[in-house]
Image (cartoon, rainbow, N blue to C red; front, side, top):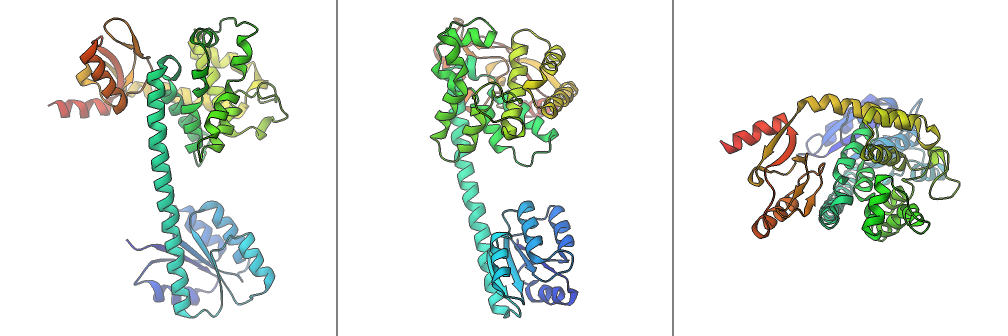
Length: 394
């Protein structure tokens, strides 16, 4: 499929000439003026290269490319100008982050070469991202699976927290949720440093000794330090560091960061984590939300409202969820446990709420061979997935 190129100019005859010149080798789109160019980007088109003229009324090339970068950051930006003064070039580089700066009139072969270089750069950026994110996502998934095996009580609900975080982000219209989802999965990573008895009392709302309380208070810092050692997780580490921070600036860490200065992802995890903690301690969802609303200084009100909407939507979606009991052979990746999975001698393997993965299935089959698994297993699944399972079984 040809790479998409967007030409933006205020002269229609120039755009027509450019389209004739490159239509055989590229998928060419044109826009008359900066506003029309931004509209083309807003329609969801993925442009490898965006070429803009400098001298345009209402919105010049630098202003347009600055906005284009915000809305389509991966697109490579080229500037064409007949006014090649130093300030124009400086503004184009510093504000528009242009890949190439070309003078008008530009020889066709030079423009064609610049376009090819821009397309290649766009491909390299996307290929590197796919490689890094694919490798990193795979490593993260494996690590969280291992953590849920080592400490099922602590990590059994990480995937559920990730799902709620993603849904909340959707209500808040967040454009990128990658850091939030990874932070949700690793938000409890520091639990592995706490004695099991202490952690159990902390999670259930029990009293802690003068020695134990500081351990619990420092969990975000410990978790942040562990994650900071992993390349590309620096932002995730900061999110985890501030996940217990109060919206008014109280809580941990004890610094001057407050309100919107707290990472948005941290504010989301604060609400979701406290909500789950209250539910674990026996509060019903509606009561827990009312209790949190009375502690307004702790939570971002916009996020508290979004989480309330999210839980309402999830309750409606629950009507599309079916529950059933299955043997281990009927358990599939994507099923969510409604009861704990234990060995025949009562050893806990996975908590209710855990989403089944391929790694978990492999471990369960191994346990069944050695010590047996208590069956049947109660799970929930989407009605559509149930239909697919029935078709596969038939």
